[in-house]
Every structure is written in C-alpha cells, then in structure tokens.
Amino acid sequence: MRNLASIITDEDNKNICHTCGTKYAEPLPGVCLICADDRQYVPATGQQWTSYHILNKKSSIRFSNLLPNVFDLRIVPAFAIAQKAHLICSPGGNVLWDCLPFIDEASVAFIRSIGGIRAIAISHPHYYSLMAVWAEVFDCPIYLHEADQEWIMDKSPRIQLWNGASHKLWDNMSLIHTAGHFAGSTVLHAPAVGDKGSLFVGDSLYVAHSLKFISMMHSYPNAIPLPERDILYISEQVNKLNFDGMYGAFEWQNVHTGAKELFVQSVKRYLEIFK
Image (tube, rainbow, N blue to C red; front, side, top):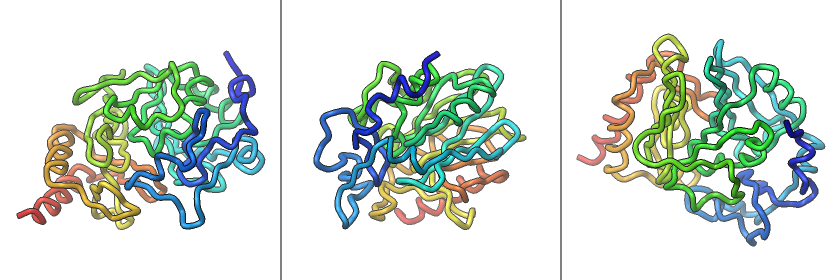
C-alpha cells in the first residue's frame, strides 16, 4: 500500500489551477483549458497556478456525517470551486462521488479506517481535480464517461472510461448518463441510501438555495441555458429512477425527502419555456 509522499513527487510544481482546482501533467498550458471553456471562467486577475506544497501548508479536509452511510468531504479553508465530495459507504465497498483538489495523510488514514475506497466516480470535468492522486493512494479505478475524455488533463492508468446510458457498480448502485452540462455528465443512483433511495448529482442537476427548484444549465457562471433536447434527455434518464433524496456538490444542496417530485416539477417548468 503506497503512501501519499511516494505518489506526490512534484509537490513544489505549480500545476494546479487556482480557479477550478484541476491538476495538470506537464507541460502546462498558458491558461487552464477547463476555465477557458464557456462553462467556467478565467478570473479578471488572470490565470493563477498553485502547488500541492502551498495547499498542504494551509489546508485540511473536513468530514461530516451527512447520513448514516454517507460522509461529505470539503477542503478547509475553501479552495477553487469549493465543491464537496461524498464518500458513500456500502457493504460491497465504498465509492467516492466526485473529487477534491487536495488530499492529506490524515484524510487517507481516516478513509482507510472505514474501509478505503473501492472506486471513484465523477460527475463532470470541473471535479476531476486531483483524481489521479486519489486513485493511486487508494489503489482504485476512476469511472468517467467517455464523452468527456478530452477534458482529462492528468491521465492515469486508473481511469476506466465507460459509455452508453448507464454503468452498474455494486450493491445496486449505478452511474447514469444525463449529459446536459457536459456531454458526459453523470449522476450516481444509490437505492440503499435514505429510506427510498438517493441521487448524487453534479451540475446537470443543480439544487437551488431555496431547495424548491432544480436548475439544469450549460453554464452557471455565464448563465447559458440548455436547449430543450437536453432537458428532455435528462428527464428521460432520471424519471425512470426511484429516489427520494438528492445531494449536490455544495453545502446547501441536501434534499432529504421529496427530491423526485421536485425534479419532475422543475423539468415541467423548464419545458413550459419552450412552448
């Protein structure tokens, strides 16, 4: 079992985007390709890069019990997009849903103490972040939809691309292709999480602060909507799933009950715009 220090051998190299947290292999582009895309942005102050060494001086990962069998993880203080990841604990093995642009020895020790990580699955490229390092530490695969392979900036033999409408994991969990925000965007369906099943989502399904609406956008920072065909495809893929909870990448995005009804009503409201 490899330790973190033997995996991160370039800790002084400024190869992590300060805005989105994506780790790059050499050589670095002048501007982060993830941020230059119209779904993200390069700050007015210009492109900035940071290193693992700099982050490690000031960062830690906070674990919170979101549900009896789910932890949420976030970097403290907040960094880059400031998303949280979810560690879903299951009898057949734990899955990390989405990823963080930092990892430390304390977090590795804690996760190993509760069974480690059997696989990492990521909703879309904004959260690829430090995925290659996480996968090496926990000796596990990374499941990504092949439609987003062009956005992989730190290639790894741990990456397993899948295609089609769904990919089965274990314990009845599945990755569901929704497209929308990115061509390969996915959600994770976990029937054993919560009383009636749960959906772990990325930005193709974005829970509003009010918890009364679910947004579906091509770009959130640039306010670019999705076309009708994408809303219909998301609806087709998600409507056939049984779930009552929905959990997103930010602190407020926890819908413990009524999530399926919320989704149905949100799709209906979107589709009324196209009439």
